[in-house]
Image (cartoon, rainbow, N blue to C red; front, side, top):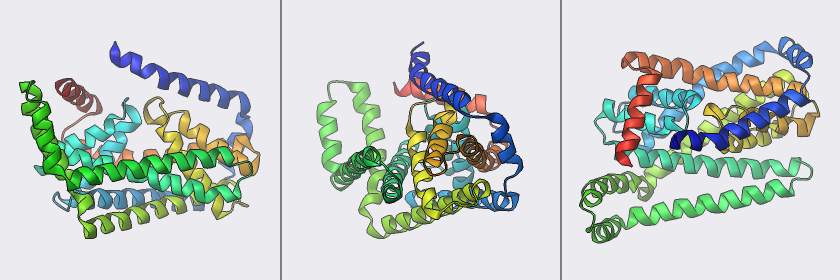
Length: 329
């Protein structure tokens, strides 16, 4: 019952946005846009979608200090995105940490902080991209404020994680002193925190962090080119700067509470961003749905192969993750 209540706000947001899409969009125009799209450009974006996943796995392996095999990281990355597309509560993030821990021998609590760092850095990149796009967008003062707020919060979060990483012994000693009255928390929380702080150590390794930022930059550039190709396939007059705003909006749309996979919020954010430039809601939705397919293709194939190799199913992983959550609670 508690989990169902947590689903309700996101479900309501998704349903409201889907209803708005149905109200404003002419589906015959949207279908014509899909039929008349430049499929050569869309084919190029599909190739880039798999390139994006390959680079994203390298980003994560770098954060993991190259301890696990690259192929294991690649399949776990695909599995995580696949789980996020179909399971609630962003369980794909826990899922890929859990599945990689079984393949690599690394502790779950050691892997988890690398995902947190990756996601926080994603927010920083999306805020920077959105801010870079704002000079090309009219009446963007509200968006600018949101971008600046997110940027400040992200920088503060990274700074706090860096402080913890630099003072891990102090943080661990403080935890042990405060938790001594609760033996269970003292025993299990201490071991988890020790692994967690060890995982944050990447922030104190200058060369490793530079490598991570390099691969993350390449990853976002691949996404920008892929989204530009998709936009160009539907709007031949599209300018590269449109993609900055579209990708930034897509990233923030995906962060809003919603049904699994950001259903409704992703399409709403992308189509609204394209509408700013084109004033064509129906064709904008066609492009947004294609970008949705772009996200499903790479995770579906790579993640699906990964799950089959390990004899796992979506329902089986979901049950294991829920058991893990209850154990932690």
